[in-house]
Length: 190
Image (cartoon, rainbow, N blue to C red; front, side, top):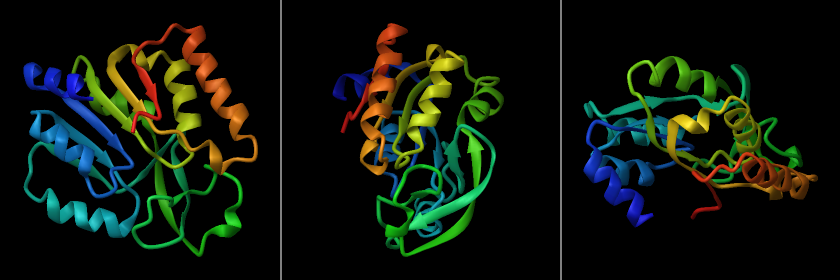
């Protein structure tokens, strides 16, 4: 991670994306290294914290939406207000373990990057995906569309434990990375 951060310092004028921003720890590091950051956090409580934290920061684009491989709305399942295990409805099995939910807007991350980021930046320096299960659909689309070729580093935390067929999902993703000889996707990087 330190090598990546040192490279950000050299670049200037770069943009990164933080999906599942939570309280903004990764965003803080990226900002300190000189990157502009587009953040995605659908949790209304965490989003409020991020709004205060990054108020008037021109290098932050804060989005109160979830990311997936398609646009729409869905249930955002919660166990607790600030839990890192909160997730969108179709991003796992065992929905009954969640105490409550609210409706949230979902954006297609690949479409967002293609329409809102790449017209203004040649490349994305760093993409962090920590979205509690939705990463499998997102990563499939990133690989299918070859969007990874426009991103220097992709750090994806996987949550196969949320699925009954989680081992098959992670094996499929690892095989897609290997079969396409992709060198810039890092799984379980934390």
